[in-house]
Length: 298
Image 1 (cartoon, rainbow, N blue to C red):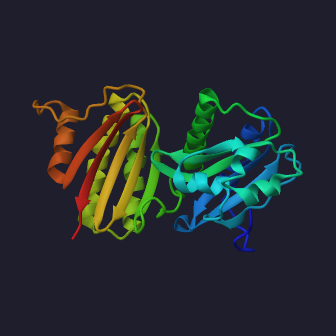
Image 2: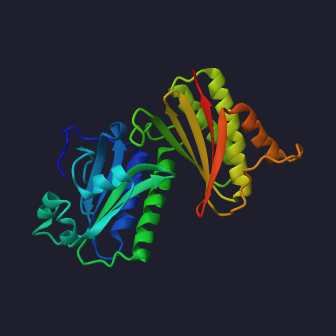
C-alpha cells in the first residue's frame, strides 16, 4: 500500500488504545500473521492506516493513504463489503497487490469494514499464513468483529471527541454517528451529541431544538422497548436533516406505531415526532428496527 503523503497522522490517546486492543485481538485469531487497520478521514478521500506484525515487537506509526488505491482493504472500506480469498483468488482483481505478497508467508487475506450502524468508519485486514475455508461461519465471525470494532471505536472517541462527519456515503452529505448503551441514563448524552453536531453544522436554533426533542423520544423508545442499546445516525444533505435510531434487535417489539390512547407515554412521544417532523417512518428486518425522522430546511 503506497503512502499518499509523507505526513504522519497523530490519533488521540483513546484511538491509539483502541488500535492496540484491536491489534491484540485480531492477531490472536488462528493463522493470522499480520494485521492492518484503516480509519476514514478527509471526507472519505483518504484513510489513516497502520499495521503491525503478529509478534507486536514494535509500534508502527499511522500514515495517510489514498482511499482509492486499488487494494482489498480500501475496497472493503469504500463499498462496505468484505474482500476475502486466497492470494491466488485475488490476483485477477488485485494484480499488483498479489504480486507484492509473493515471497512472503501470506497465502490468504480478509479485508473487512469496521462499521457502526449503517456507517463505515474504517476497516481491518488480516494476512493469513495458511489457507482458510472462508465459509459462512468464518465470514459471520469476521463481520461481527467489524461491528464490535466499530462500537469500540465510537466509545474510544468519547462524547466530546466523536469521529469527524463522514461525507463518503452520499456525495455532498454530512454524516455523524453515535452509539447509545442500553440504559435510560444514556438518553441525555444522545441528546447532547445531536445538539453539538447540529450546532457544529450551523443549523438554526429551531431546527436544533426540534430535532433534539424528536431524537429524545426515539432513543427512549428504543432503550425501553428493544431492551438494549441503539445507534443514532444523523445526515444533512441538500437542506434536509435525517436522523435515524436503529435498535439492537434484542427484542423485536420496539414500539413504532403511534397509539390511539394519549395516556400511553411512548405512543404519545411518537405522535409528537409525527407532529414536529416533516416526515418519519421505520424499517423492520431480522436485525431489529430503524426509526427515522426528517426535517426539511429552507
